Image (tube, rainbow, N blue to C red; front, side, top):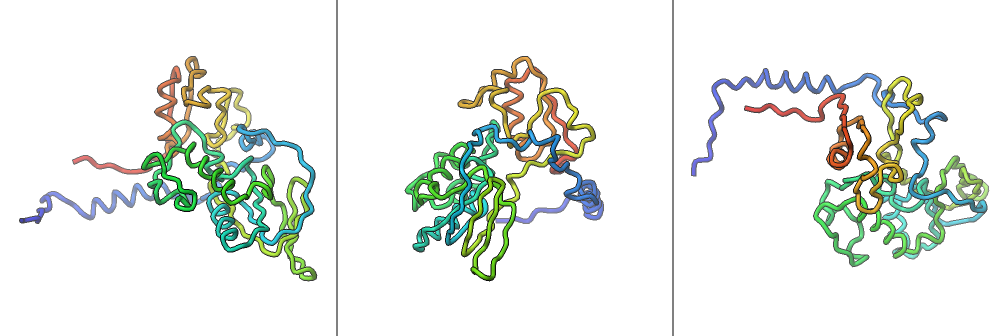
Length: 280
């Protein structure tokens, strides 16, 4: 069988490389991460938890063997392996109101993982769980995180809606002294950092963003009270609304089809295309 494919006679490799170089340069920015707005006081509503109210609790003054900062997949898997090894004094400190990390925060309509669930969801065999779909939706992934917390008895010692503010090594006691924004003073023999990069919203560097008078929220803090559809993603409250979506990354392309189905009018703003397609 002849599998040889002849190159077209008008193919110009140098021109193609120049085209891709040009497209790459359009995506490079000298300001890097500084292109995004810091979430300062006027923009604190962007990081508030719309899913679970923050409950008052007394400050903790405990000594634990291992303290884990972050309750996403990294923190959950670390805690699970420690429990399997017989280390039971494990405390997870998590900013969200439950385990899950990015899958706690990202509940926007259409949210789905682009990695096969059978290799993405951790500890499936240990929990005896089979994913429902090849590519799991966010709701299933979040539920799996909660199941991990229950299976390995991680809820009893966890501190939710809590942010670590300082880690200080005390050579006298050979312990980490951990303080939090909830007034906790915890002592730990070991500290594991599992604070991933995907749970903090990024806001575009748009001048006057905080002065916008309409309803505005980040996709990672989706307001189903405003849109409707908390249970079935039927965003029925948007029937008379004009919606603007800023960004066409993985999140944008997932939520836009659902918004387009229910909104009166939808605008999508894209700074730079994420890929380049050259039709023949």
